[in-house]
Image (cartoon, rainbow, N blue to C red):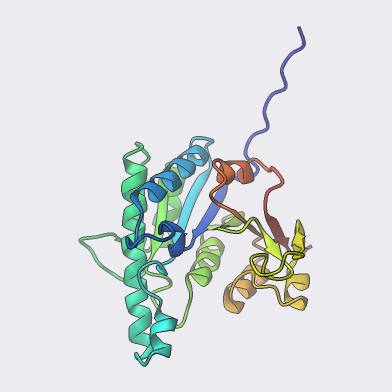
Length: 246
């Protein structure tokens, strides 16, 4: 009887998983946070954690509040952005609750001090938590207005020495145009940072993208809701679109 092939191990040791706030909301629901969706996200993160991968999570707040949109409606931008940062804290706590219900140890670290809710972000402490097998959830953005959570993901990935940013979306990769509007939209399997800039592809906002490019942190954009897609990406399967320096 032939011997079965030994399955390949994870491609990455330490990752930053970027999840949009909108991903936590069920389509058509009035609830900002779906316990079912958050539970599914927690299950997928646990799958990766069980592989021995060090996982940091950055979550957005768009399901609750968007600072940029509120500023367009007349609210002072800095105040609107601080409100958005608080929305990411609520989402981060929801993900923490889901993970700890699955017996995964977590720490929430916030860029805005709130001692009764979460730890303040300290780079070395975050790295030690990861080394000890805890999932670290970064909330409250960078702590500064005018910066997106994409920028937070790029900054934290650079700070903690993550090997990759996994940008979990509702689209299965990067296209040359909106696949929801154009039937002939072309999906890219692989891009360089230069190509993405030249083609004006909306991978991340410009500040986040520049950080990734300068620090050579690759980005993989993929559909999170594929059942086991976070694990599959970590195992090196060809899912989504990868953006690299070369």
